[in-house]
Image (cartoon, rainbow, N blue to C red):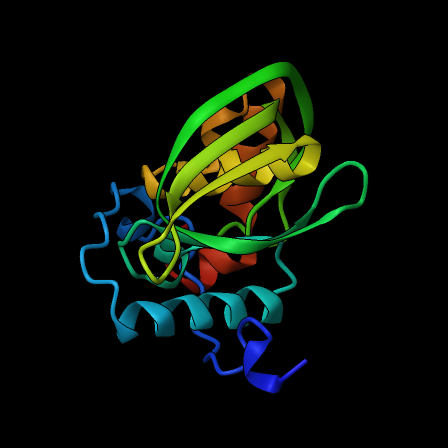
Length: 184
C-alpha cells in the first residue's frame, strides 16, 4: 500500500474539543466546498482519531463546525469498516435497541451504558462529492449514530438516563480535563 493511501498518513493531529466547548453543542453546517480544504480536514480527522485511539471522529470534535465524520470501526462480527461521510444524514436507525458501553474522545476516560439501535444507515457524500450510503450493524451502527449525534450538537451523554445519567454527570464534574479547562 502506498504511504499516501493510508487514511490520515498525511494528516495533522489536531487538539480535541472537550465537553463544555460551545462548538460541541451547536448544529454543524453543511459542507458546500468539496475542494482541497475538505480533503485536508478528512486527513486531519483520521490522523487525530488514530492518535487518540478512537473508532470515529466528527469535525466539531476538532473545533470545525462542518458536517463531516470519519470512522475505522468494527461491527459485532469483527468486520472492519473504514471511511468518511460528508453531509451525512441518518436515514435509518432501527432493529433491536441495545444498551451498551459508549465513550467519546470529547469526554476522555468516561463511558456509560447508552441505548442505541443495532442497525443504522447513513447517506451522504465522499470528499469528491460522490454519493455514499453506509450500512452498520451492532457496534458499527452505534458508531454511526454517535457521530451523527455530534453533527447535530449532541453527545452520547444526552442519551443516558436514570442512575447511569446521574453517575456520568458526577464523573464529568470530577474529570481532570474539566478542571484543567476551568469548566468545573
